[in-house]
Length: 75
Image (cartoon, rainbow, N blue to C red):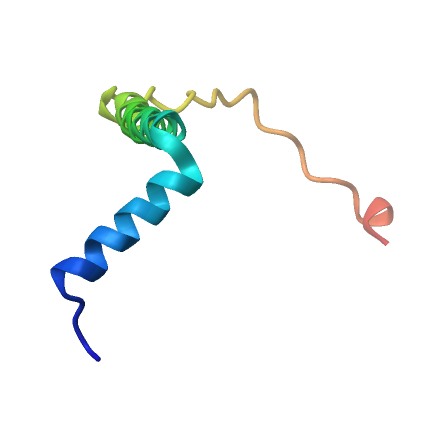
């Protein structure tokens, strides 16, 4: 009950071929291959920006010091 014999596999393949046909199976495999290639391309594109050095942070320039607020304005 655990494994299939050669006859079982042949019947299974014949049924699959009758249901899907030769053209449909090759079309599905082509779509599958395109999906894998697209996935690999996406992974390669995702790594490209990470290899570039990051831009240095912008420099903050300080102006003249500001005088403290008067006591009355703080209340």
